[in-house]
Image (cartoon, rainbow, N blue to C red; front, side, top):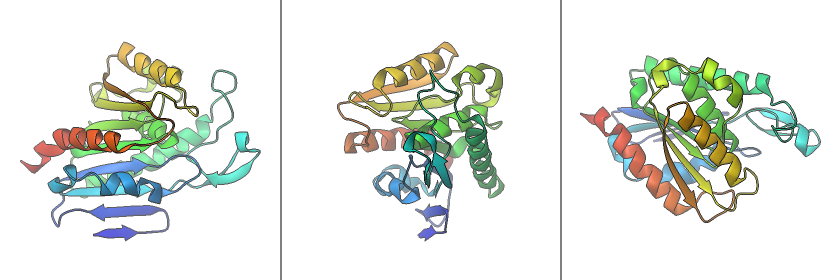
Length: 227
């Protein structure tokens, strides 16, 4: 069953729910952009999943000359040259944290929840998960990178110190260059995180091979929820 609200898409794959996946879209689109991933995760949906895909609010984006679009946080330019939108990142992280808490409240254990996203949404998913105070099942990063990387060591929560992280990136990505994503991967490895890294011959996009891989990965992570 699929239910759409103004800022949230929900999909129930079985009458009895045992696990959850949360999907965060990229810049300039909304939650419907996650449909291709959700509907093609054929293996993991057998488990009885509650899929959640929220839509980001409208924000004025600096690099787009202040034009409003759906975004989890402002993009002010190259993070190496200008400050990141810390306030926007933290505001959106609080919203996603509330969604995760709500799933725990409905009886789905946090370790049976996987959070993921694409591009800006992937970055927010990673940021939120590593600071979340309850152990999650895993994190999926599609064409994303670390944001507020310098603060991670001091802000990360020990509950997710060993959370599995799946990172998938295109070798021809011009929006978030491969080298930037590799630096994020290397920083995570330096901090002791378990990162499963894969590169694909594509640009800033999602390909069927990625979806198949993340589907099998998610099934493996969440299958114990059914036992």
